[in-house]
Amino acid sequence: MEKITPFTINDLAKVTNHRSGEIKFGEKMITIPKDSDALDFLKASDAKYVLFGIPEDIGIRANFGRPGAASAWESAIKSIANIQHNRFCKGNQLIVLGQLEVSKEMKEVENLDFNDIDDRAKLSQLVEQIDKDVSHIIFNIVKLGKTPIIIGGGHNNSYGNIKGSALAKGKSVNAINFDAHSDFRILEGRHSGNGFSYAYEEGFLKKYFIFGLHENYTSKSVLDIIKKIEDRVRYNTYDSINIRREKEFNQEMEQALEFINDDFYGIEIDLDAIPNIACSAMTMSGFSVEQLRQFISFFAKYKNATYLHICEGAPDLGEDKNNHLIGKLIGYLVTDFIKSNQHIS
Ligand SMILES: N=CN[C@@H](CCC(=O)O)C(=O)O
Image (cartoon, rainbow, N blue to C red; front, side, top):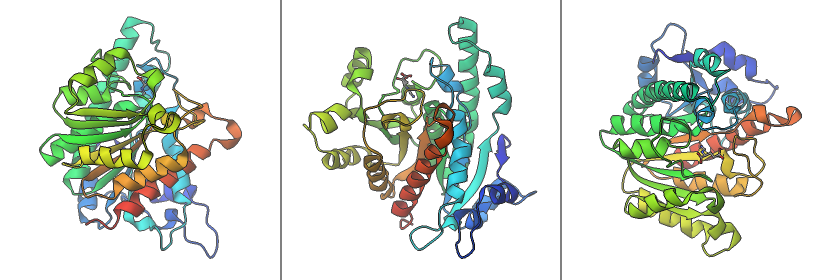
């Protein structure tokens, strides 16, 4: 776990806005004490959820996307620290582990150009390095029986989440992905558009359900590939649910659950499925924030739910005056997950 920059009690105090008569998450969340071994501390702690940030957008750069997702972690932790600790949700269920140390890599990619073949190869190599670190950290958290809540970063990190979970569980795992895109693109070198196809190909991902694909942004070749493996990879489309109303949102969630709930599963949330959220692939059409919150609440309430990953939000691509909103949204999603999951032992 040497690639983690811990989030200290002082860091937490700095982002918590104290108000008399109120108790904020930042006053109750648990941090790893200085000089203590993170794994030993996690093992001894009663808290079930481990919050971990991945402040990178290298996978997005390697996918010809718009950088900015590296800023989501800072925005999210500031918002989460200021959620009220009360009877509905308690801050002391959360251990703030810290963030993946990627500052050197982020510096290295600053001037790389996707259109240059050598630069592109370099970007993919760095994504592979991040994959190793993420899978190692997720492996350790899941192995201890804890539930990681991961704030990205690009959707390339689905690979490390799935691999780490599979290694910890000793078998391949399932995933449900709330996303406008399949991220099941060809194995052309790692980037944010092929985390699931690499995890599938390498035997870490067993069954995969993509919830709410945007028909306009899914290629014929990906649709053809998925069709051939429909015993293991299924999807529905946003257009068929919310536009043409051929399918019903709640029934679709039930069907997706039936598909993935035969084993451990990860919950993957790509914020580019939600309209007007600053993201690399920002959209004006998609499921509402309420539908996303209901989705997380629904899939979190089963014992097979192994982790939550929220990614691709990019406050740095948003309006200056309201760049706290993505963090605030992530705060809602994190607490929706915990509220629904906390009763499972
Ligand atoms: N994680 C996002 N993946 C999408 C991005 C699409 C885009 O940049 O337009 C994909 O590769 O399909």
